[in-house]
Image (cartoon, rainbow over all chains, first blue to last red; front, side, top):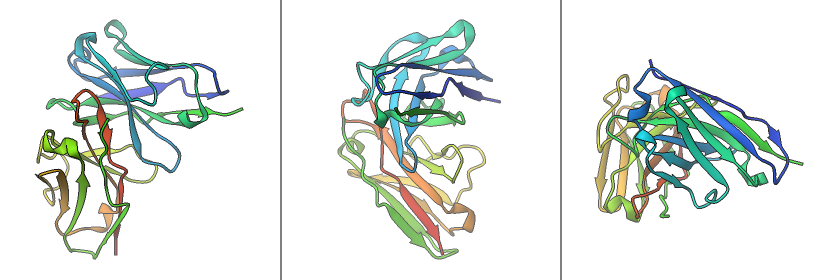
Length: 120
Length: 108
């Protein structure tokens, strides 16, 4: 069974930094592209970032490029999102997501999310 | 990045058929996937790879595309289908992913 468990969510002040982690299990971690998708309270889904299988290739939404960095550690079966220069508009539930075997945009498995609140 | 546009809200009578649409220029090149999200839950993939359903998704859910519009059709809507539905696809460059704004489906 595929499991994705996010951690690291917290309350942080504007301008601050935070690192989210996602522990993955139940699949060949190195063979799938992984994504971060966020959802602000009461709002829709917003794609944030992806990192390709085998660690190759990253992509970011315009709203976070230059501030967020995605990475993965195959030895730990973990996905990370380093978030710097946080803004109030970054407040959201951040989901760790695994693509389907058909590839992205098909996002088949979702974690339960990590809540990030940016507030003074 | 390009945008995907969805109607904010749609309603359907119990047992009837409803179609939820998603419009965007990138859909001329890339197919859309569809997600169902119920309150307090993570989204769930319901249609992928043009018109395939993950295990456990009933066959009353189907997908299609014409020109710049992708559609999710629910035949014989049930009360448990009441949820928010989102489409997504690659953007026009193919290097980013984009979501539609979501459609809240009400089953009357």
